[in-house]
Image (cartoon, rainbow, N blue to C red):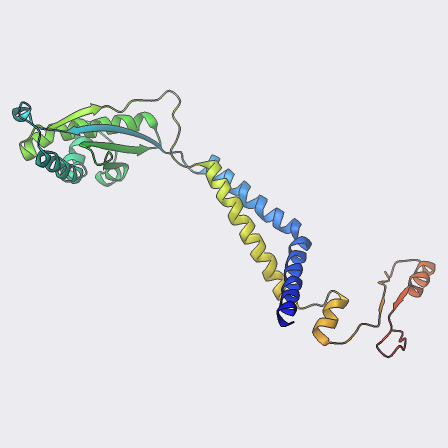
Length: 260
């Protein structure tokens, strides 16, 4: 019996929640629409598109060892060298020389922030990736860093085991890697709905007014015996009298009728 009562109370609570959402559905729609449109406007017109270009380098055996057989230890050594090369590529020795040789109007930190180095699926290939608002400039910077590194690594470590596998090329119709307007709008849509529902429930929680007879019965524990229709001040007298006569009557538990 208690389980049935708990189930009924839960059903009433869920019904009240849906009623709250239904009552302020327009507010939820407006907030969600504003959030989605704001995200789209910012993504399309405010945030600067960023393009990406990559150059791939192959770390293999040096020219003196090309005729020798590859062993597992040689491969592991080259993989370890990729980690060392990644640090060297973003070091001032390479970055400053790129800025100097190519007469770039940017600081070392700005170029370093544009460059990233990653191994390609744990292979002996590493990719130098550059991100820039200009796709053409991104490709030129990626190639400049790769050529400079290939030249300087021979002087730094006395090795010639780095080859440029593929160069960064300009794309006729480049697509920015960020921002992604549709993804941002989808996220804003979901967040907007969650925020709108939260605001609606907060407004309902802060609203202490009584809006229905059911709330009176639930809060005070007394049955409602009658209600009076709302009469506007600017209504004609005849209409006011007719509305005054329309009253709902309810009988108390004792069977007596009381008029309010």
